[in-house]
Length: 383
Image (cartoon, rainbow, N blue to C red; front, side):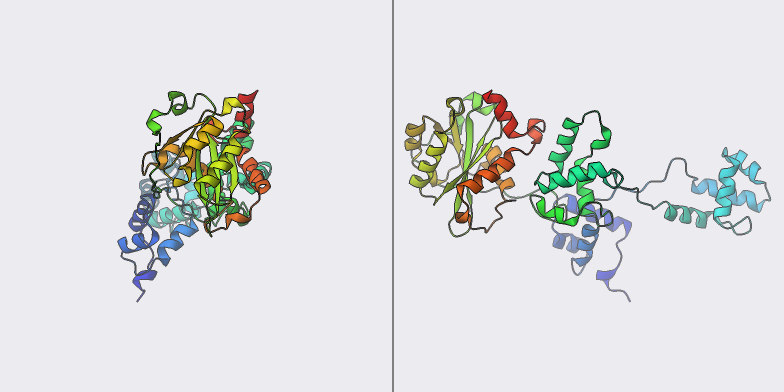
């Protein structure tokens, strides 16, 4: 007797599996919900489809229906000619003739068997767009190797080639070409260039970091000028520390209007060290790009008044447990994990290397900028 953990999933169970996956449940929870002893079967279904729910199969609107096949079967049993059956169904005689010949002959034709066979024959995956467009496939592979996300590639292609549909592709098609095993269009090695490095598409979700620390004379983000809030004027920055192992850190700054990022090497998170490093970097900027800085509640900015005196840049602090109030910086720090995974010792990276990573990040198109790159956006502001 087949073990319950090895049983095939019914159509209803597969629907429930994908629905639970869409809701963000983990593989183990899905397995328990489907009364499976282990999660391997669930993971196998997800992995074969790259974590992307397959599109539901539908019959073609021009295909013969089961009712029509039953009418053909009854007509054959009554000795009716193919032309007469076709006329009754309002179908071409050649359609009925092919149907009968494909499924035996007049003596062996059965409607239910013919319908099942037709459904199985129709299960032929269409060739992927990237498989049939070599030039497009090459461009996509090159951009993936530069750590561009599929959505950035898709938006950039539409913006660069607005009239050439042959050089456009959706980000979902790129993800499917990478993750769905049966396609094999893009090399699996390219998955390593995705920000998460996963080999399966996961539903969105996660937990926010908690801001801690008490800052003396902190100015609340609620007092920040309206021009900073609506991103209308450049020069308003968001900042944070990217943490690594062995108490190593990188200071990150993101300009709200252009999303331009800067990475700053710091030797520790002591407030004197961080404030001094940030001050040196900010003072290199043109005056029109030195308006404000928004930080979380971390004590590394306890000397914020010293920073303001040195740079003439006012520091505003987020509310406790509200990292979303500096969302551009949070998003950028997430992108940086592609280059500096959690657990990496950040102390070994030079400022030159950090500048190189920042340049690569600033040359990637952003959806929020209409798929312009932050570097190009900043250039427009300065000129």
